[in-house]
Length: 269
Length: 252
Image 1 (cartoon, rainbow over the protein chains, first blue to last red):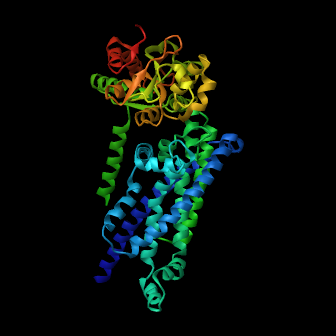
Image 2: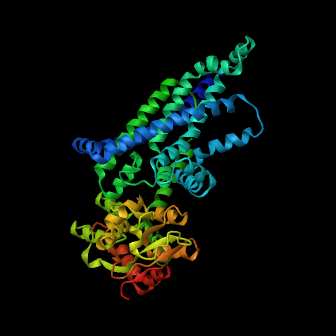
Image 3: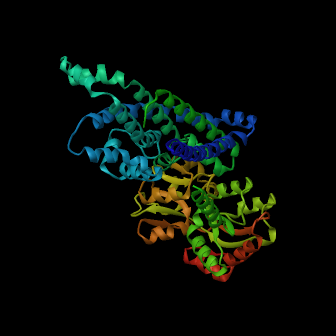
């Protein structure tokens, strides 16, 4: 009697499992088809010619160096912020965490508009102007836009990385007479190696893919503040599908590479 | 479980039914205000749902080119409809000029750079924004106006941004990030009324005034409704709505 119930139960569980697996596969297959469509439409010659065009080379180069610079800046800030949020209790922690996370849920266009207002019309913009750094309609603006868009993702990964590192290791180090800073450099950082790699890779992919924020703050001007997503958008407007699809493919390859490296690090978000 | 699956199927089927439009219109993004009012009126009198897709003229043109289903095409300038006619995408007899599209210069409130005429855009130190000459219709027209008046070469160094969308131009002027922008008159009437920016008219002889046309596509999936909508937007009743939003009818 009992064994029959167990059997029936397993039967039920299997149906449940099968349905969930089916749903997962359904969406995965749709996504694979959608991604595949991007690669199937253009012919190879068209893509190759688009890749070698002056506009594409400019956009690739600009995307690469703004992306690398923003990623370096993001890493520089995400590491201390992630560590702070994971280890320290202080007044206003909830506020800091909420505000830093906010851009994850923020539309990029809104973030762009906020940054345009900040750098265009307030004392913050004037301070940077006095230092000779202009953010509106410039390549520096692209870096600023990418920085603020990618920062929350990197901070989250850094925070969860430190959350998973046993604080006991740090206590041992402290009890052996090392200072907080020495412990951070010699114990916490090496343990967080994978997390740092993961957050950097995700930040880079996010920087390269930033569209709305760059469009509003840096203007999205042809061959001036034109990064890959802007190339994609401009060429849809120009009716040049070859160029548009090619930039789409390049962006897709960057994302794939990023997610592949991210999966290898086995860090949880 | 079965019930759940049935419910899902019904839900998917039902949303599919709801989303299927009886009329698909591709429209220039700058025409959103009158188009939305025209859509609401047409929907209530004909008991249908219309789906209007807004984009830059180049963008919607490219979508028709890519074979997206479209019943009525209303771009920001007649050039796109002419090109569509050449390619056989629209029906010649259905092309109707609707309203005039008048470019003018928008300046921030208080006119900080003292722009009073077109020539002031070429004055050194004036920060100018125009649309990307290849993307929105206003970009191409702005470049042509400057070229026509032999001001393009001297204005070019002043152009701080070529915006891919018309809406960016408005934001940049209103937030004082540029001193002047060449933009469609109908787009600034609303912002001007709110006191966000001021308007400098371009001398009639120096200006290039465009007409906005409407046309039914040859491959229109809902041809009869499309022809009705096409007639409605160009009727005196429809033109009154265009006028309300700051457009001048062609017949005047």
